[in-house]
Length: 165
Image (cartoon, rainbow, N blue to C red; front, side, top):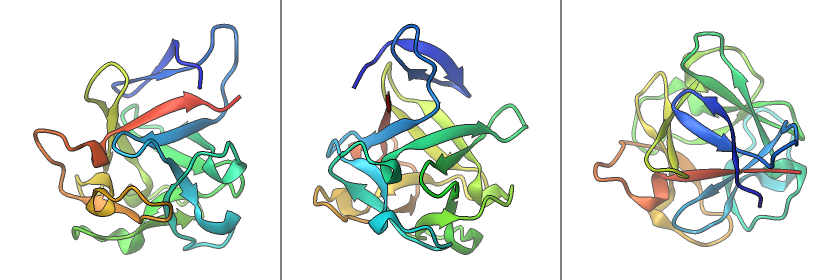
């Protein structure tokens, strides 16, 4: 993973190698160093998103697409073109996060907020809740869902982006 500042998305500095255009990012959890992953390379709406050991595969590569409001982004999977989505636009703790056809809805828009120079939290626009690895689990396949944002921050809600070259 190559880390050098190149652009700002919302309040997060995302990172890439100098001179490289970056279209896709690997997003890894601070507590486990595992990547945000679309289960089994699924392409269907509702395919689960969880953490998995980083492999560099397309189901672990994500683009950040400006939602048009200047504050939020869509997090779109490279392999399917679908957006990270909170199931059913739920506002409940533990609501599943999966991929779904990009519809432009608030449950697909994410605020990215820096917590330090290289870490950020992703906050769902519709609920104000954070992208979270369930129970701070470190195993491959541990679910990712939304949960109330912790303050002080918990490492299972902090994420890092590295250029997927």
